[in-house]
Length: 338
Length: 285
Image 1 (cartoon, helix red, strand yellow):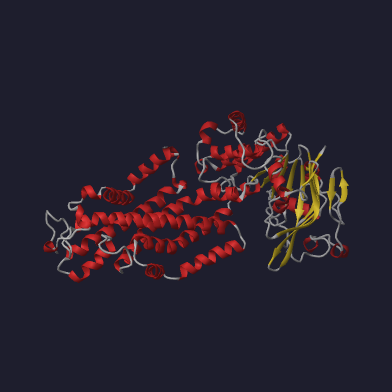
Image 2 (image 1 turned 180 degrees about the horizontal axis):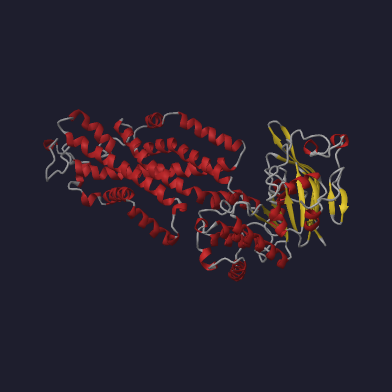
């Protein structure tokens, strides 16, 4: 599979009053063309920071990228000029589906106005380059046809009517469908979906996920999908990467991930899914602080298998199977499905 | 325009706001048609000492003043001065305060701090004292009242817009437009300003009431337009020595000020409810 995005050795820190919080510590992530990657982890493990680093929208006053590279489709996102990236990559090649569809629309404009604004600047026909630009009637017509077609594809009832409405007049599920439609309109190569269904109820979640997967597959768009819900990741992802305390600890194709997880953390994570015979089991301990993270493996204070070696030195990425990597000195060999 | 029709329908439905709008429309009509509606249009400058301090009658609806001029006619012409002062002073305040607030809210650097500290200094001095000081220094005239009011009122809009801009900038849709490469002025004018315009409109409407009160206070203290101007505050000041016998003399301008200020406040409150787009029903969209 051709490589689309390659994040390697990325380190991002946030300056806080108590010191530098190292939120991403040497993170690597590869996304192939047309691949749907699930980025799974607890709150605060760096999922959103990684997604934002790729988008280039880290808070400018507190975030520091100290090392690493992000290569996207032959371009280096950390080195290029910010204005060029905003114009040529962000919103065109890489689009974003936000977590909360309620605060993502501007409440004072109709949905149609906001879609038009997007198409004016970011439609596939829109010329590159910033500044004032002429929105020709012909392009407006083409864009309008494109919008209508896509709104029907995301199964919105009465697309004409919806464009005339204000955001608060449509339901959360419809808003998230609109968000997905807007993310697809510029015909991007990569969509970053940051927990796109957490704000929705379960039945709508399933519909939205199926829709996202179907559209991504049909259009050969890659998706980086962050979630803390393994079930959701299982539904739609081709490959799953688990993050823990700012590091990716395991990455494997979905089947292998659920059948044979290698990292102790992944194991505990899968075991903590509620089930009828076990009830709910958590992982003892809590995620470490990121200002002074534990030396060695960041998971060792919570790990049953930790040895002296784990406390002293940091495990590197090792191959654990076909396209399966793990960051552990003592990977679990094979897991009995429980 | 659908939006305007919607606004009017909502205004009519909200009785107190409709009352406020009615009072303000009446004020505007009275100010424009003062020469037609007044019974003694000449009395703004002419005096008839033999007819001084006559009680209200069919000839003089609100009686006559110490110079024998018709209080009713002078009241109508006073409305012109009131409107002119309030509208110009508020417009200037908005034109200064809104851009200052937008810029200070958008940027987070020394420009922002500088602008807000300046407005803090203005807010730290009591409004009326500062206005008196300015009007006193420059001398009594309409222009100086307007200047004094504008100079003391703009920080209110700067503060309001600053706070609203800061909170609006945290919204995902603003962040997204910045991330997509929208320039600062574009974000301020086309994304932030429409979101905060309802608060600005409401503040402006209510601010009109406050401005009229302060203008009347300056007139009362003799810092407004000089005699024989029919300015309401000045008229009340003149009437003091004839109270309580010539009660009509102070009552007419007093009631006028009261109703106009109340009208603006009622309308402002009504607009606050109406202009929040989140309370709109889908059929009205």
